[in-house]
Length: 357
Image (tube, rainbow, N blue to C red; front, top):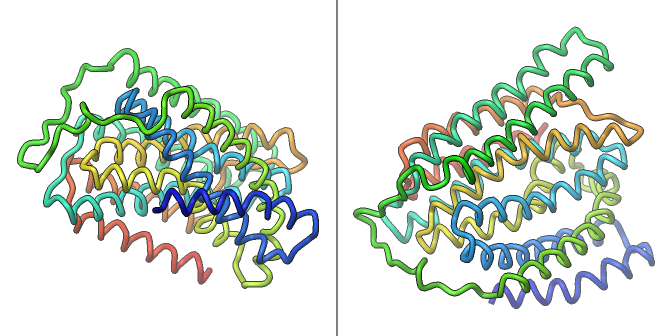
């Protein structure tokens, strides 16, 4: 049913996006068209990456899902950088971190927990990711805020570039560690005490490998086109609805940009494949913090306005709180619906705060 809705949205939304931008339809209407079209395209990308994850296994599948989910946000952010909307880009990075850790993981734990009383996932992967989360958000995002208080713009940008390069190198090393040197070193999760069916062995991918790759490529190109148009509506829509740049970035762009992961992670949790859900939510957060954010800092050097890696205090406190809450909840390698509800409550509290700022 939902796949048919997404297909209709794409068939209607893509032509409407082209015609509406040429005929200069009202910004608010086009904002809605662009958002729905991107979400529908992200849903198709989610189906393609799910097919690939069945072939490749949960770790690589989760990485693929996170990568193509974040590709949408990266594309939106690059066009926002080009337009000089630095506040929106930094806010969307914040929104991705708290959205993936609290909204995506929270919904996955909640929906999965309603079907299964207790769900388990790899405690080794969870603990490995916890250390990286602490580094990516607590260390790499807080340090620029503290050190740049008495720095001029040039030194602030130099520090941001240095941190960005270090984060990209460490992220690549983390992937090498997980997928090459320590692949298969840690035992696979035993789903003891949980109503688990060995459907992973029997499940057939919806699309073949090459069909899924071609669909991903075409959907990514379509997202790039619509994203550029979406960015040009931000200012007008913000003025019309009274939304700040911070709210547009943290809530709207982050949810639209991460729609593929949101859908895939929840579906996987419902199928009792919580390892994939956690890999999508945590892996996507790490990718945003350690790869997407640094790439955007370096990309901004080619635009008139450079973007330092310096967040506002509400953004930093929200991200740090999301990380600490996630660490406490995922560190035991199991979840239930109440833990999911707790994470969702934290997300909505932060959402209200950003709306009222």
